[in-house]
Length: 345
Figure 1 (cartoon, one colour):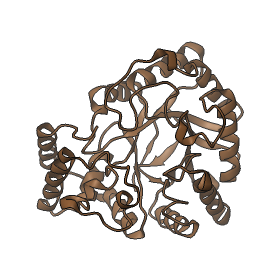
Figure 2: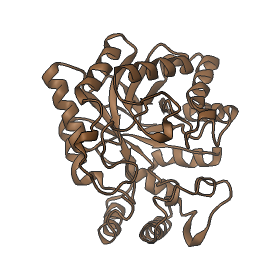
Figure 3: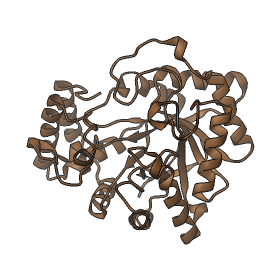
């Protein structure tokens, strides 16, 4: 395993972060513990979760993912060896069962952290993130920005002050954002400097061979401000493995179970995927490992969040850490990208 210091923080994390959003949905508690045991035997020390997990969110299994992590840490007695990242949910009808009037304000953030700490069975969280903005902006696959300032929600300063209180109380070590824009991240950084508050050390956004849109503007912010990207969906919902090519829909796969996850199953996305899969195989590589290695090698990526529903998938995804893509292969990847730029933003 390879490790690095996460942004402007004191957190030393594995470059591969274990995503957990299927636990409690597609994976049982026993399977979650099996994944955790194996990942940690391979040197992974970094977990990403959220109060609303598992996905798709639903009231009947709300919080199960954090509970599974908590029961594993209790069984193993290894809390100090684990770096836990979790998230407070933003507003949205699809999570309205969590709390009334969901906002990124003091009361909601306080309720969220207390719930997560209880489910995880710990008295602190290493990295606490805002799952998505309170304001209207383009995230979760929305292509274009729609300016609706009357729906800005909680002022960013109030949100940052609420997070600062958690840091001062020792409930949270570091803070970050997720599904955020360059403007949003820069505003948080500016407010932190202006008011002497903790700064965001990470941003967790989608990043993969089919969606490199953050390279247009966010990458400069990350590199200049020493904020690390936690890349999620590095395999584009599993699309980049090639398992959905030619109309295939494997039984039990995410897209077979959840028909609305179609962001990457487009004509343009399939054509680009076919080229990436062929390129990997021409170089004697597994398509999933090439796609993951591409993400991990980027200088602005602090953690590549992999997920798996089977041990076979987990083993193969973790093996990607041993792969370094050559300059020639990176050039070939960029050629496909330039021919079909961001087919699935």
